[in-house]
Length: 135
Image (cartoon, rainbow, N blue to C red; front, side):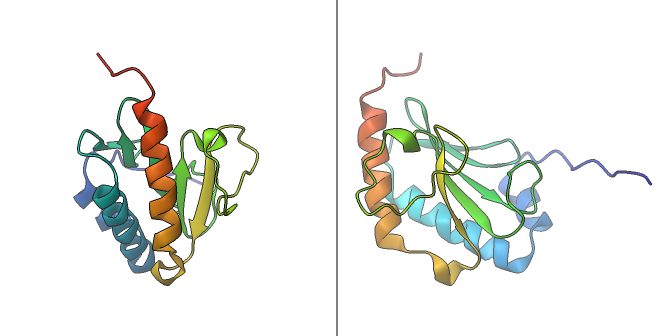
Protein backbone atom coordinates (compact mmCIF):
# COMPACT_ATOMS: atom_id res chain seq x y z
CA UNK A 1 0.00 0.00 0.00
CA UNK A 2 1.45 3.34 -1.07
CA UNK A 3 0.69 6.41 1.01
CA UNK A 4 0.24 9.56 -1.05
CA UNK A 5 1.71 12.55 0.80
CA UNK A 6 -0.55 15.53 1.35
CA UNK A 7 0.41 18.32 -1.07
CA UNK A 8 2.12 21.45 0.24
CA UNK A 9 -0.51 24.20 0.32
CA UNK A 10 0.88 27.67 -0.30
CA UNK A 11 -2.29 29.69 -0.95
CA UNK A 12 -6.06 29.67 -0.57
CA UNK A 13 -6.70 28.62 -4.17
CA UNK A 14 -4.73 25.40 -3.64
CA UNK A 15 -6.57 24.76 -0.37
CA UNK A 16 -10.02 25.41 -1.85
CA UNK A 17 -9.23 23.10 -4.81
CA UNK A 18 -8.66 20.21 -2.37
CA UNK A 19 -11.71 20.73 -0.16
CA UNK A 20 -15.15 19.18 -0.63
CA UNK A 21 -17.90 21.76 -1.26
CA UNK A 22 -19.31 21.86 2.29
CA UNK A 23 -15.87 22.33 3.88
CA UNK A 24 -14.91 25.00 1.33
CA UNK A 25 -18.09 26.99 2.03
CA UNK A 26 -17.65 26.65 5.81
CA UNK A 27 -13.99 27.71 5.64
CA UNK A 28 -14.90 30.69 3.47
CA UNK A 29 -17.70 31.85 5.81
CA UNK A 30 -15.44 31.53 8.88
CA UNK A 31 -12.61 33.41 7.14
CA UNK A 32 -14.93 36.27 6.22
CA UNK A 33 -16.24 36.58 9.80
CA UNK A 34 -12.69 36.58 11.16
CA UNK A 35 -11.35 39.11 8.64
CA UNK A 36 -14.28 41.47 9.27
CA UNK A 37 -13.88 41.39 13.05
CA UNK A 38 -10.15 41.35 13.78
CA UNK A 39 -8.30 44.68 14.00
CA UNK A 40 -6.51 45.98 10.90
CA UNK A 41 -3.05 45.10 12.24
CA UNK A 42 -3.97 41.40 12.24
CA UNK A 43 -2.93 39.30 9.24
CA UNK A 44 -3.85 36.02 7.60
CA UNK A 45 -1.39 33.50 6.21
CA UNK A 46 -1.34 29.85 5.26
CA UNK A 47 0.38 27.88 8.02
CA UNK A 48 0.18 24.14 8.61
CA UNK A 49 -1.67 24.05 5.22
CA UNK A 50 -4.64 26.03 6.62
CA UNK A 51 -5.76 29.67 7.18
CA UNK A 52 -4.02 31.07 10.24
CA UNK A 53 -4.67 34.50 11.76
CA UNK A 54 -2.23 36.43 13.91
CA UNK A 55 -1.57 39.87 15.33
CA UNK A 56 1.11 40.35 17.97
CA UNK A 57 0.83 36.58 18.49
CA UNK A 58 -1.28 33.74 17.12
CA UNK A 59 -5.03 34.36 17.38
CA UNK A 60 -6.99 31.65 15.59
CA UNK A 61 -6.88 28.94 12.97
CA UNK A 62 -9.45 27.43 10.58
CA UNK A 63 -8.76 23.73 10.03
CA UNK A 64 -10.89 21.63 7.63
CA UNK A 65 -10.99 17.88 8.30
CA UNK A 66 -9.64 17.14 4.80
CA UNK A 67 -6.27 18.57 5.84
CA UNK A 68 -4.41 15.93 7.89
CA UNK A 69 -3.20 16.34 11.49
CA UNK A 70 -6.03 18.62 12.57
CA UNK A 71 -7.38 15.99 14.93
CA UNK A 72 -10.91 15.99 13.50
CA UNK A 73 -12.66 13.44 11.31
CA UNK A 74 -15.29 15.70 9.73
CA UNK A 75 -16.27 19.34 9.50
CA UNK A 76 -14.17 22.47 10.00
CA UNK A 77 -12.48 23.42 13.26
CA UNK A 78 -12.20 27.04 14.40
CA UNK A 79 -9.49 27.08 17.06
CA UNK A 80 -8.48 29.95 19.31
CA UNK A 81 -4.75 29.79 20.02
CA UNK A 82 -5.09 31.28 23.52
CA UNK A 83 -8.55 29.87 24.18
CA UNK A 84 -7.51 28.99 27.71
CA UNK A 85 -7.15 32.73 28.44
CA UNK A 86 -10.54 33.72 27.03
CA UNK A 87 -13.46 34.17 29.43
CA UNK A 88 -15.90 32.48 27.00
CA UNK A 89 -18.79 33.37 29.31
CA UNK A 90 -21.24 31.52 27.04
CA UNK A 91 -19.08 28.36 27.19
CA UNK A 92 -19.25 28.18 23.39
CA UNK A 93 -15.83 26.58 22.88
CA UNK A 94 -14.83 22.96 23.46
CA UNK A 95 -11.80 22.53 25.71
CA UNK A 96 -10.71 19.11 24.42
CA UNK A 97 -7.35 17.63 25.38
CA UNK A 98 -5.21 20.63 24.45
CA UNK A 99 -4.57 22.86 27.45
CA UNK A 100 -4.29 26.04 25.38
CA UNK A 101 -6.24 25.80 22.11
CA UNK A 102 -10.02 25.80 22.59
CA UNK A 103 -12.20 25.22 19.55
CA UNK A 104 -15.56 24.70 17.91
CA UNK A 105 -16.24 22.25 15.06
CA UNK A 106 -18.78 23.07 12.37
CA UNK A 107 -20.25 20.39 10.10
CA UNK A 108 -21.96 22.91 7.81
CA UNK A 109 -21.93 26.66 7.27
CA UNK A 110 -25.47 26.76 8.69
CA UNK A 111 -24.07 25.61 12.07
CA UNK A 112 -22.04 28.80 12.43
CA UNK A 113 -23.19 31.15 15.19
CA UNK A 114 -21.74 34.45 13.95
CA UNK A 115 -22.64 36.42 17.08
CA UNK A 116 -20.81 33.96 19.34
CA UNK A 117 -17.73 33.97 17.09
CA UNK A 118 -17.67 37.78 16.88
CA UNK A 119 -17.82 38.00 20.68
CA UNK A 120 -14.89 35.57 21.00
CA UNK A 121 -12.88 37.32 18.27
CA UNK A 122 -13.27 40.67 20.04
CA UNK A 123 -12.08 39.09 23.27
CA UNK A 124 -9.18 37.35 21.50
CA UNK A 125 -8.19 40.63 19.79
CA UNK A 126 -8.24 42.47 23.13
CA UNK A 127 -6.02 39.75 24.60
CA UNK A 128 -3.67 39.94 21.60
CA UNK A 129 -3.33 43.69 22.09
CA UNK A 130 -1.84 43.04 25.55
CA UNK A 131 1.04 41.05 24.05
CA UNK A 132 4.24 42.87 22.97
CA UNK A 133 4.39 43.73 19.26
CA UNK A 134 6.37 41.40 16.97
CA UNK A 135 9.76 42.68 15.84
